[in-house]
Length: 141
Image (cartoon, rainbow, N blue to C red):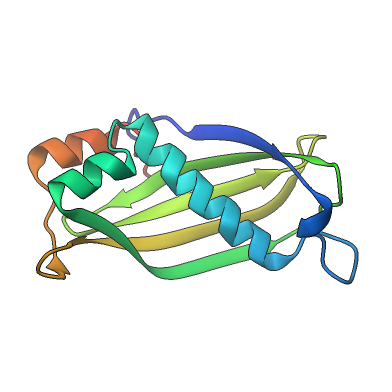
């Protein structure tokens, strides 16, 4: 296991996030993953604006979510995100979602690539970029 740290943040379930069954809609988890990715980039000092300046863009190629328990309106949600695998051109981000009682309600992961925005070709991470991402790299044991 490497010395990286998880990025942790909290949110709340709002009425507009509830589906016709009465619990959080599946799409909301993907929105929370987007927020998590942005917070992760901020945490490693590579916010979206800085990435734009370097000409690099992260592009998602796969998303997977496993739902374990339902969340309901006004519940507090704690979300953890970190990188579990870092390659030269891709990364796997892990997500954990907890309710206000600390119970695990969902897990997920996303695979992303890095592309050069101008050429729209795959970008290989520089040593400096790799070091930045290692701040949130926790490899499975």
